[in-house]
Every structure is written in C-alpha cells, then in structure tokens.
Image 1 (tube, rainbow, N blue to C red):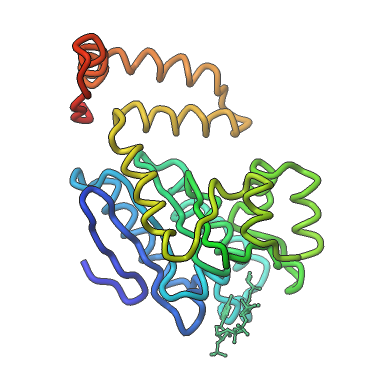
Image 2: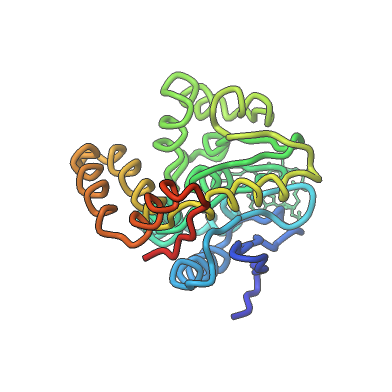
Length: 260
Ligand code: COA
C-alpha cells in the first residue's frame, strides 16, 4: 500500500514507518494520523513483520506536533472527538500493539510528536533531538496521552514542570530523566534502533507480546496488572516457543522461536 504522508520500508523483519511531511516538520495532520493507523494495523497483522521503527523524514524533526493549522476551526465537541479518536486509532493502538515499536527520535519531538514517541515501547534519540509538550503556549493541554505517559516516564514533578512551562529539553536531559532509553549520534540513530529491535526479535514473540500486555495493564486503573501477569505467565507455558526455549537451553544452543 502507498501513502501520501508516510514512507514504508522493510529491512529484514523490521518495518520502518517514516512520517514524511518534511516541509511541515512532519506535523501530524488528520490524514497522516489516518495513514498511521492503517500502516500500523497492516504491520501488526503481517507475519513477515516482527517489529516497527517509527521515525521522521529529514534531519530536523521527528514530529513537531499535531498540525496546529487544523486546530483553528475546532469547538469543544471537535476537541473531544479529535483527542478521543487519536487515542484509540494511533496512540493507545501503538502502546497496546502485539509487536514492539521503537521510536527513533531524530530531531524535534514536540506536542503530539513527543506523545507519539511516548506511546512507543522504546525511544532512542539522536543528540540533536529536542523534546517538549508546548500545548499551553497555544491555550491547550496535551491531548494524545501526554499528561499520563510523561508522568509515568519522568514522574509527576518533572511532568508538571515540563507541561506547565512548555520548555523543551535536550536529548541528554531526556535520557537522564528516563524519557528516552539511549542517546546516540545522528548517524548511529537507526543502526542503534535496529540493533535493539533485532535483539528483541530474537526473543520469543508471544512472550514479548505478553510482557507488553502485562506491563501496560499495571498502568490502567481498571485492570489488575498482577492478575494479568499471572494469566500471561501461565499462558506462556502453552506455547511451542516455551518448549523450544527450555529445550534449547538444556541442549546448549540458540532457540529458534516461531511465534507459536
Ligand atoms: N503544525 C503545523 N505546522 C507546523 C508545525 C505544527 N505543529 N510545526 C512546524 N510547522 C510548520 C511551520 O508552520 C512551517 O511551515 P511554513 O514553512 O509553511 O511556514 C514549517 O513547519 C517549518 O517550521 P518553522 O517554524 O519555520 O521552523 P523553525 O525551525 O523556525 O522552528 C519549531 C521549529 C519546531 C520550534 C517550530 O516549528 C514550532 O514551534 N512548531 C510548533 C511546535 C508545537 O507547538 N507543537 C505542539 C503542537 S500541539
């Protein structure tokens, strides 16, 4: 499938989803969000795809936010609908995906851009990346999960500071705060993201998916993360990959997981 605002590239079992609106610093307009949903659905269902790397086109921005031009005509109901639809179709959709998603943050990650990165399971940033949630400068608050996920990642005090001041932070500071998992030079960004994802892809896929589910469950008030962990742990014993993993350990060889 071809897209207007995304580039899709495959490298082995990794699928790249590249936000491709460079002239607008890859800002997320309605069409781009819709395409993202389609691309992610396809990737989650495609057995040839093991994991996904999301990045931005060009050297300047990962994503500089939701497209501010599209906010202009919205009323209260429109604002509610925009946020609710975005949560379901893209941001929660990534977080609850059955495959690992890595954000390769290659420049500005602001507003919806940082929210997109935070919805991913892992974030790697290049040294030139700048991150922030500047919505209060527009008379708004983050609407794609930013108030929740930033608080989960960096703690309430720093999240309140970042959101209320609208200040951007550097990649190094984001790393120190735990907002990104690693910082590397610009040329090493994609190799680093690929190395990390390939390591995850060498592990048992159903167990990786179960870990995502159990970790997410603990962050939702309506779910008991411990109960979900017990259930998912038990379910792992019913997989072929569990048998293969144990056998390979006992036979002192590398496991060949099949995701079944
Ligand atoms: N929505 C819509 N368009 C955006 C955008 C956004 N979030 N971010 C950048 N753009 C557009 C600019 O309007 C400009 O378009 P133009 O050339 O047609 O005028 C183009 O991208 C380049 O941006 P520009 O502002 O000229 O680049 P810069 O290097 O001077 O500044 C930023 C870079 C990221 C600091 C600045 O673009 C910015 O503050 N963007 C908005 C960030 C934001 O508030 N995001 C949260 C939205 S909720």
